[in-house]
Length: 251
Image 1 (cartoon, rainbow, N blue to C red):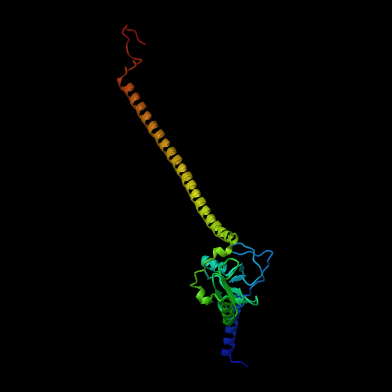
Image 2 (image 1 turned 30 degrees about the vertical axis):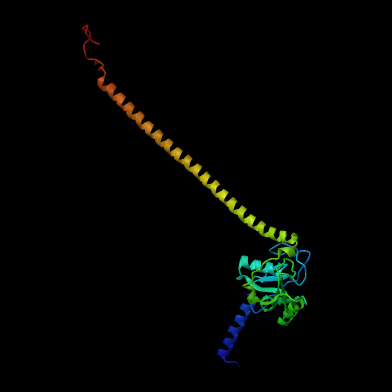
């Protein structure tokens, strides 16, 4: 029979393992298959081919974000940060197998062709990346850590214009949406301010009108009081019933 202390320790360990599994810990994030008919790049909105250039992020809540180029994956990280990322995946250039982003090796040169002309290719091993660089007689070896300081420049000449325009249009469209939202918000604020100002003016006008009416009523009442007082003090008194008239007769 196990000691009570050991049983308690095993229970705690099982609880921790259960929590990690529920949160997707322990490397349980898995890349999803690419569907060429429906999948589009989250950043540039281009259709994604099921090829060695496709990349993917699995968020901590299990959402799959797919990209047609490693550069687009990096752009998403720049915009959104990394706190929600459970795992990131790239593909081995030779086999097409999914690799963990941080474990892959990379070959970079601006002349290397990729869908969005970022010029970065991923490999399962350092030797494979070095062999490709030697075969092309161009490029440099990089790791995931090296990519944090990478310039991520697009070779627009290689893009041939069409895809470059699509990629830039996606970025410009997003910026335009943000500008329109800000402009609409400003207009709404101005409209609300004008409406509130109009209501305030109406309220003040009503209040001033009410005060004016009260003032006029008070003034008119005071004038009537003075007028009545003057008539009562300066007018001739009516003769009483017991007084004699000038002709000597009694009323």
